[in-house]
Image 1 (cartoon, rainbow, N blue to C red):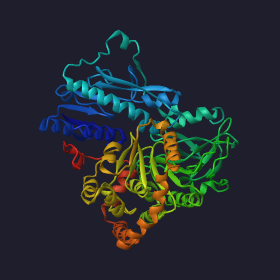
Image 2: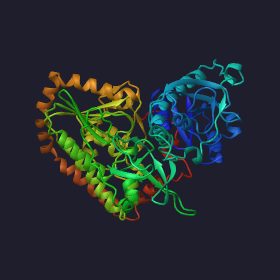
Image 3: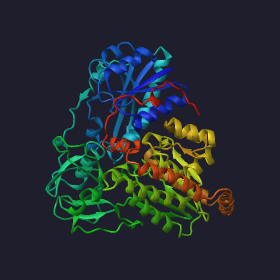
Length: 569
């Protein structure tokens, strides 16, 4: 079929639905909800068979949904209504939830039901759940609804039915007064639920050092406490605030926007607060976990038999200069251990999205910070590429993009959760790219496919990535079970003769490649292009970065998304 996706943004869920429908042979285009007139013109000019709205914060015009069936994804179970569905679920500690696909009608969330799929909710942040458990259920529901529509015989379920009407519950939008933290009274678990319900957007508005800040994200702090509300420690860019019965780590902050001022954006909490943290102790980040303790760190290492697991989790998958340097140091420590297999990643949610555009935007000299950041991530990728005394596995429990994909491709094996989406390109940010992509990407998929992937600038599903050779193994696992599945697979694989043979061959392979064209030649050529981009004040990269960081909405749908197309490579 010809399917048009209508979405407020080409976000993770929209990309997931886009790749899955294309993989199944449908012609799929995207129209961003930037104006009713543009949507009407799109539908008039090239009428689709079906419209699907995976993520939409505005209503579809009546003349559109009355002429073409429009299926809207609602991140709530059957009968749930309202724009803050998932926020309320996470804030109330729900453990079961669901996703419903509704037909667009005049009343929001009240149209006929085409599919409804239940899902679990782990004790995770809203955005993490949205990209994982919610996205899994949403995709299942969309594919079911599309199949039912294609059959031509299915009749959607009316919400006027007594069984449905009995469970209808309309929730109001969640406002900041609903999210308020009472530091002197709220226990740690309550604080965590509040933070998790707003971790990406909109954050929790609060006061710190006499100023208004939005708090983003939260993790339990083990062994910390103090005057409720006080900042008692810092670690790995996060701050630790005392609660009524303990403490929480808050990794990111965003200053409140001043009237008439520019849009603000999230930064690592320590970076955002700067000199305000004078006197707050900087605590060491434990790489190895102490048995029985739940000390938070964004980089962790453990061993199971002859396999090492170096996991990392950075907010939004963005890796600043500091993140890259700390991860490189941890990688080198891991390589000193007597293991035969080293697994990078292995956790749920983002693997990596490459350099940290927010930190770059906030730097006194964004060009210099861009340069420092790209060199730091190149150092990390080079260390992985030149490891010859063990097999390195990149285990992607979630999405990866740009330099994050190339970091994964530096490993000997790439394992990917079935729900992950890869964006192996840089062009949409105006960048040529580095991270040895001109070496790693063609080596895996060939020159023609590498060119298509980077120039089309479209997302790729895990399953299609496996067919192309980007990924070696897709693990059909729920998000919460991916780490255990990766551990089981890696530890069993480490004991096989095939691993030993592969280690024995690695040094010779690297030597042969170095004779053909040294790795530093790839790096130098890439960085020459990147340096010219970074230090040209008029280059589109700078405007594109600012728009991305400040979440400026586009005024038109990008041309590469508009074409109704099937898979082209």
